[in-house]
Image (cartoon, rainbow over the protein chains, first blue to last red):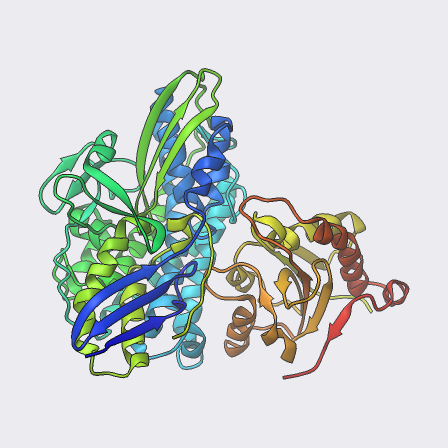
Length: 430
Length: 168
């Protein structure tokens, strides 16, 4: 029996670009590859030789959708290296900034990238005419997330205000108070979002995941915490590289991550965070989670849109709380002295755990950098899911099978340009 | 013709010629423009939707590729058939054209939309502008300033710029 090959040359509605290759022999899946081609690890090499203060600005350019995540992991890693202790007020302001990014990233993905799949549309564009109120709601959520980034970060695109030790400038209280009415609206809009997406039809699928996320003593994880797994482990971030390994595969220059101990693949992202931190959600998010009829932790990737929506509620509620009580941190930035050292940190990007490690010399020059994005860590899990997902569609025409594969991949909200650090497209049609 | 409620957006990224939209704004600002005009830099076309409500005229600038030589400038009046044959820089989420389509379907598109494209050479990570694009930007900024203001300035610049105004 000859092999049947299905190719999706370019995945649509994902950040960046990537392709999918499936080889079938009869009903059996012989090979699945999420194909990504790029100059490997370019940003890690670009950082070497630069001053440590430049790390937030350089890493922010890895991704236009999640610059704050890269900045947060960078500054926390540098502060770990230099033993800088930030104040609770600076910490709070960083959480507010991260809330802005979660809101704009999650709103974009839920409304324009993922929801169309559940409603049978080819694109968010197609969905706009029959669902204008919903699309406008998502766009307005994204807008307010961006406005928060601009207010705190100096600008929405590649925020420039984030510094090792804190911020170059803390916004005045009167600059942030005008945002409060918008975030009161955002909280209600986020609740409406979660209730809307919870009504979608979710294909049954048990991913059997090992969930991996940060967990903090009392907060929903963003910038700090230990790494926990659904196997019951607690792992210090300092031990990340002892526990998680990256490997290069021939078909992709994005590295795949696995557990060192047994080669096991794992899942990071909203589904993992909710599954491991449900009790840490904000009051409204917890209440809505309880009413939606989904048992958490869920191991169904199609429930990721609901997990993202619950995190939208959390981010809006936390942002509102911080805005209402906001007092500028004084000082805005903690002084430090450069010294030969190394440090690492992990923060929760919208798409999942983002790990950075740096070594610097006595003059503060970066000697080495390691960046492990969440989409890299999920790559192996995506392929594993596809291997189990595809068999039910083998008797369908190739375009139907390809579309089903795309729908599954999009649930992960893969930021392919982050996982590869830049963008290179190869298009083949067989 | 005095412009009213005009928004000028430079779309780009920090990478190579993809910076063109942002760098054009730097050339535009010293030329001065009426108080009813605002300028914005966007890294994602979707950000445009954050700013267009109530705007009467939208002018966009971005790097593009259409097989032409780097540094050449394209001008499109929405809706223009040739927009579909032009590749606009950047990836992430919605393309520039798809974003404008979305705005139109949501009935939020300003009455007048003009797109300026600068044909790009390369978009290597954190790379500077290519010489061809760098040399084109002052001319483009003057062209946009002219579009916002005096028609006689437009005449002086002549038709270096290929205009594409065919409706779809």
